[in-house]
Length: 122
Image 1 (tube, rainbow, N blue to C red):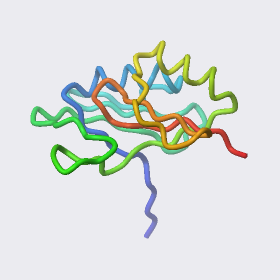
Image 2: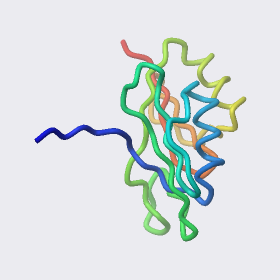
Image 3: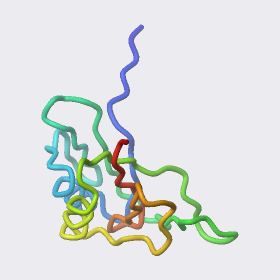
């Protein structure tokens, strides 16, 4: 038996809208698309990200508080130039989080409110 992880799935009010954001951000290709479902992957065929429409989606709260939908996962995106990556993310529609945990990581929110971290390896 062989098991192969093909993607992580993020729910959103509109899968196609969120996929368009990540397509711009990461420069990945659409490899699968149907009503309410999109999967993106890098050109090298590595593991991708999928998006599913969920009419009852609730934006996660970050950092977590006692109320609201808590973040259950986030994406870590390694970059070589943090300032340039932040500018690119904002030009794609990302919003920087008010709270930033440290200097080497910048937390942003995608259009559906999922947090993701841009970080530079040391």
